[in-house]
Image (cartoon, rainbow, N blue to C red):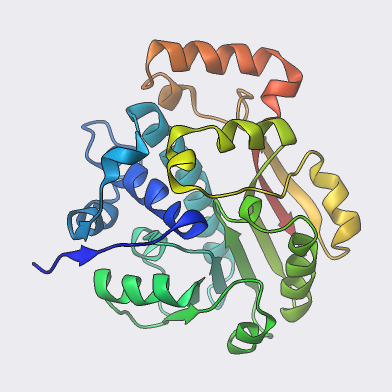
Length: 276
């Protein structure tokens, strides 16, 4: 089996955090995500994952986030069998293989050219699946995406790494390009971003974070076509599955309980979904 030497840096390197979390969680006997594709990809990569200091709690947390986004994706596809799925900053995520969309769905994964080139070496091709090698903030690539089909736009672990003023421009451009659809992503308060910056895994990459989301409804003013559908707080009991939190270590479970009880801490992170 060929081994791929990976030399990504800064923001690009953070994709290895989410990949390793999903792969590691999928190897646990009580796995939620069961992402064998991520596990196989990690086995083909030559990279010092130990430097990221990823523990079981982080694996479970990332898997929970991915599982919710997977569920929203399946729901959208079920209602729109001719849909476009546009996965921004896809990294090495294997969502298309986890979802296994039916014929009729046009799926586009977008990331930097070097990331897309690595994906091509790690994952198989499939019908209805297109890879676009470009920065998500470059307007040129959007011309490859159909305008006349309902679209689900996904951005997992991406938007905080984009410049503060660039995020609304990107979202306006996307929502104006397609006729209708939904947008789903994870966002963080300024305090949440501080916690992420100081995670050992993120510090190890040297990545910088910029964009915050303190009020999801305020984004409707910046991107007029958006209407908030779902706002799941990371530390609110309505925003997580208690059975999954129970899999974490006791310090992590205690932290979740404390954060859920204190409003500013409960709003550190969230998963949001808009229609347009």
